[in-house]
Image 1 (spheres, helix red, strand yellow):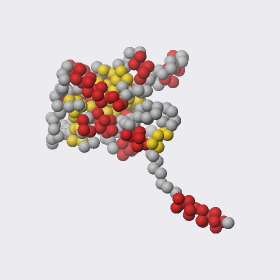
Image 2 (cartoon, helix red, strand yellow):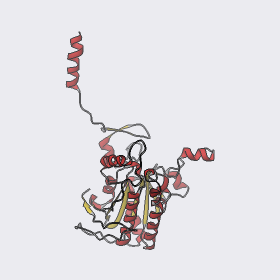
Image 3 (cartoon, one colour):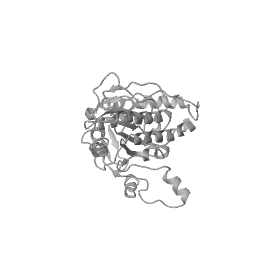
Image 4 (cartoon, one colour):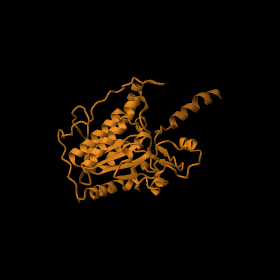
Amino acid sequence: MNWLTNVVRPKIRNILRRETPENLWIKCPDSGQLVFYKDVEANQFVIPGSNYHMRLGAVARLKSIFDNETWFDVALPEVTPDPLRFRDERRYADRIRDARAKTGLNDAIKVGYGKLDGAAVVIAVQDFDFMGGSLGMAAGEAIVRGLGLAVEKKSPFIVFAASGGARMQEGILSLMQMPRTIVAVQMLREAKQPYIVVLTNPTTGGVTASYAMLGDVQIAEPGALIGFAGARVIEQTIREKLPEGFQRAEYLRDHGMVDMVVHRHEMRPTLARLCRLLTKSPALETAPKPAASIALPAPIPSGADVVPAVSPA
């Protein structure tokens, strides 16, 4: 009997065993239902049944907005990778290396320049998978450079915000990115170009306290968590129970903090209409055809010259 149990049965199990990919199914965080991964991916990572908007990576987001899923990757100047030589449970340099390997990004923000419905736009996307989309020196430089490019090209600037706040491993250098990005937003305003912010889940901390709440139009995805401090911290501070849905996109829209809540399927046409409306023209200046390089604005306030690469996405 031991021979049948210990030898024959395991061999039969190995023959019948089928390898199943780990990401074959996705569990909806809202309803708990299991959904086939490919169905969710084809639906722009929106759960079909519950309409729950899952996080979307930077590259996938740019693909969903730019015409023909093609754009120029705006190269960004290098920054000091670990200015404070910070270490907690692990070295900050190791965390950065792991985040780059996981996401394929250099830092939390990716900037692209291309066409949106035939109109030239600059788009910055914050990727929450890169250390929680935290705002550090590199991310701040990305926002500033993207805004500077929009001023130079006389085109709208759209930012998709998703962040847990400032990056603690960079200390005061991270916090200084808040006033820097605000100054860059003001430069875009003086150039009379539209600044549109799309708040995704979650957008909190120093990002909310700076460029994420300064848009000419504030858009949010359904159910997005938007705020500065967390709900638990607020309740402990004011010693009161917060209203139902507090800090969610729909609640903030009803109370005037957000202009509109837009489904991900409607995001691209909505942004295209807003760009045309805010520039008072039926069509914006079209972006150039792919070339070896594009002239970028002078660094703000300083940095190396950069040459964007054409991204096949």
